[in-house]
Image (cartoon, rainbow, N blue to C red; front, side):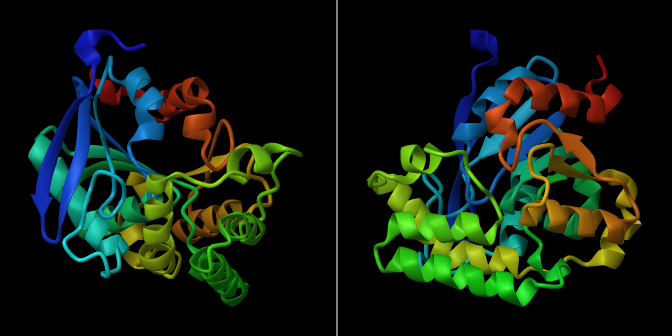
Length: 279
């Protein structure tokens, strides 16, 4: 448990079309931990481990959990989420920031460094689902449509099965039933419905501006989970690294390694950040 002096403080920020919930803990150079659709909660253990040396910001992306949107029917695009992150970095006023994005949050982070490179010291894009970089992009987009259709039909477990199949993620025997076998609670249903109707397509169909990212490639780290070999996001991450002419950096765990193995992930992240703490 983090010392009380490093306990998170919860705040909100009004942005165009949404009210963002975010937490700040610690002191030092700014590190932003962000997912999409994952909210701030699963980043808590990693944030606690970093807060002794960094100001750590975590947030619920627009439309998820504690970050309500004005128009629930509007899509959440990577550009919109990048603008949200830009406003959060400006609000905290401890930048430029190290932005560690996971999955859809990695796409948000890449969109941020494209649009506002002056606010970003380093982007760690951990397994961004950039399907447009794959030769089988059409097949994967079609797989996402199955995910969405099953969810909207009320087949929640079937939707998650389709998601894992489309991502080439194989869970150990019994894990799927333990995690997805029961009926999700009301908040999980609301968040996943928003993800499947307004986040999944814009995130996975986003095509990065490779020229813009190459111009800041020295500030981009492409992260891959050591347990993710052969999965779709392993492939998309390697494709992005190849486009940028950089080698991917391996992190402990799989697609959600920051939550599965926060201590190991924090240690690897500290190696990546090097002397950025200034301490």
